[in-house]
Image (cartoon, rainbow, N blue to C red; front, side, top):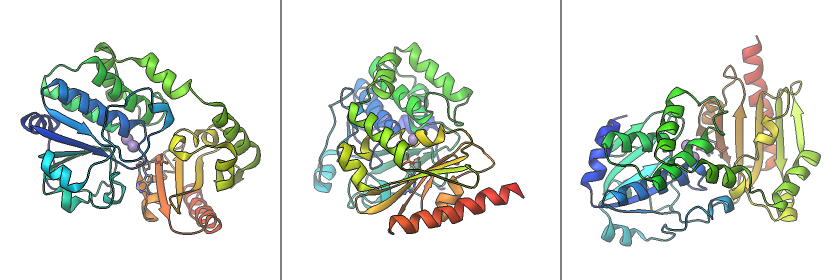
Length: 332
Ligand code: AMP
Ligand code: MN
Ligand code: MN
């Protein structure tokens, strides 16, 4: 990728800019949310004008955490108000969470920085820091802030730790390494509020979500290949019955990953009129990232996703075929 730069250089460019717009991927997860709001907080504390934009509703569990962000902005307003666009945790132009007009061509009319940790990031910013060995975009964000030598205050530290905690599943997933833990420690040393993060992420499940999960486990789990592939197709009716929405679904796939003997877990559900597949692997010998990429999706080796314009039955058949091939390839 051209225009690849260091954390130090990203820091210098951010601190030289005056009016900064922060964007991330659609359907923001904890890392998208944390990396963007952490930068908003950090850059403001450095005297910059910085605003994070989340155009669609955020997960319910994030709502107690922050309300100070933009929810609408037209391209004309952006042009009038900002010089630099910082895109975080987003690997693919189609997933920039701000609407079709926010394509790389438009964003390239600004000083456009792309900071991400997804393998295969295909966004060409003017300046790119894409590091797939980083556990979270929030980790890269904290590294950029540390490289700047500026003070990281408690609020930014908490947002960035939020992203690291959610993208590592609280330091359980295989992206957890010494570097992720050292950055988490740096953030804790600056007052990051782990208790508040853990309460929001793990100990605030509403009753309807518990009922949704129970229904899913009771009625929708399927398995194949001797239990190595565990998956669930989630009909719209299941979401309606429990008033639950996959915007709040980060972690739902772990219900399948938890099952003893499962190696690959998948969820299939409708999202905005298309089929969305979430994939997780528990064994590096069977990575799901390449499988997702071969079907037009993306993500990380052990956690990936695909969007398909197809019907759920066809998606299920396709996955059975692809996962079967992956499991067999390694067994031979
Ligand atoms: P999810 O299963 O939605 O939590 O996504 C897991 C990982 O795969 C995340 O890092 C996403 O950024 C990535 N991902 C999910 N869906 C897609 C997609 N349709 N295209 C590219 N990457 C995706
Ligand atoms: Mn993300
Ligand atoms: Mn991430």
